[in-house]
Image (tube, rainbow, N blue to C red; front, side):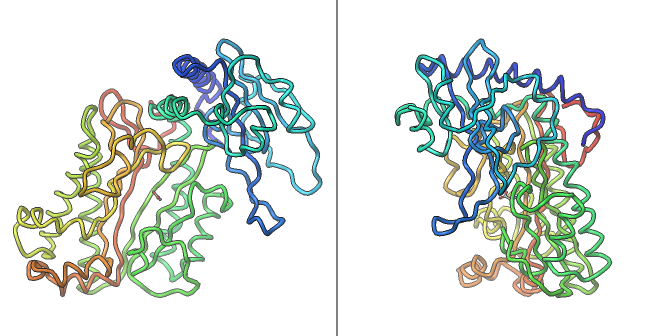
Length: 442
Ligand code: GLY
């Protein structure tokens, strides 16, 4: 738990800001009120009688980090938000208690025995509904046209782009919670030969999270597995390989961190070359963080990442031509196929920053916004040796401009990615991953 951050007053201000944002969104889209459903427990499959744990609807979570099914949050402009909370007793399962005393003073909490009972307490007028379970919406008398109205959703997504001070404090805490996991895996990799599964379990232990609490499935990739960008099929045996890529985060009251580190070990020319590459990507990642400016299109940073990576690959002798020629042939696209980063918040790939499509060269870029204060996003350049992407280059007309001996020496290391979470300030940025101080200003 955080010690010094005043979550109580930050949360009070967050709810005040959210209330005015919702009032404006409802007014602009012609609704009098909105009811947000927390969600229903997900069934493992329609042929199974077992249920998973609830990841609440993000609109609900922005108000309240409560992972209880069938709650209804009713927002009427000018009134205190009302939370209708199910009081049903089940001897099969019970939700984890919410360890967030700061939230309760902001809500009028009303218990209901059955989810259907909420219908009797809905406000009059034009009421919109947000949620996933349309059967539940219908049971509350909310017709199709009131369910997830696209214009309202667009306004509400925009409220998630510029984070409140409370949200930034949660994102900072999620970064602090992840760091013992990354440190534990760095040390375990340097001092032993654990399998990917053992390292994944060690991360959970060090961060004191259960698997469903992590913001996304931990990516733990040893050696060539790092060439699979989202490697989660953990190997059961140690391999002795010379690289480890860990892309893993933590959560704080629904808000996520998303952090990647790549570690190296071993001696010899290939290990030395890969270590130099990791060092180069780490340095260019920090340069990209320093390049962040209010008003700059994020896609311009992505293009800059390609220029920096081209320079590093040339320095390491992988490109045998000038940086300009390598850029003209778009060689770096083979080695960095993903986008430089994405917006971060309640969702790991958060909403509101990819409203326009990226350029054709950047099909996987998930942030095409213009950088603005209080945005939170990742900066995560990488270089990978992915055989399926290397093959066309190897067989193409410019193959002679690549040192394939060096590339082949690096294939067993899979790749490198370095990722931090940044919050944009009016002036400059704060790197939430490298600046872990609790006392730092948002
Ligand atoms: N870190 C996982 C992802 O961004 O998809």
